[in-house]
Length: 125
Image 1 (cartoon, rainbow, N blue to C red):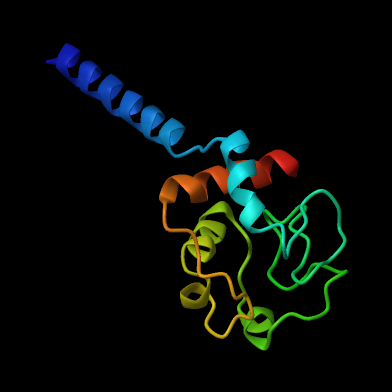
Image 2 (cartoon, rainbow, N blue to C red):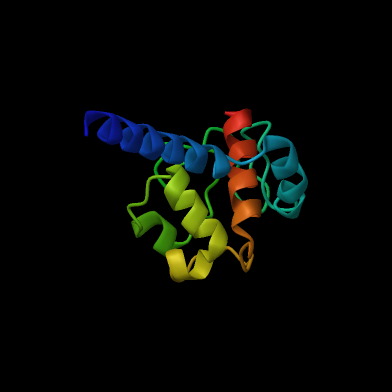
């Protein structure tokens, strides 16, 4: 009976690890997907373009990048902190996640692309 419980626990832990690894994303592949974002966002420096720099975005409150001044009222009032989970939701459907956001990008359809972009953003932090 104890061996059965230990075996089940090992299987559950192994499943959890493989699921974490599967959703981790690939920064190199994310760099390619991020090309869609480069028209409006930088990640290698703090300079703003059409949109704010995404350098150091993970853990930052929305609408607080100091060199960008044109945030929408919706973004300023959102109360969002850019966790990996919130970035993923925003990348999937920006207008659904923060209604009346100025971001014109429609979103990324593939979860794999979202995971990869997040891995790329993390690699640049």
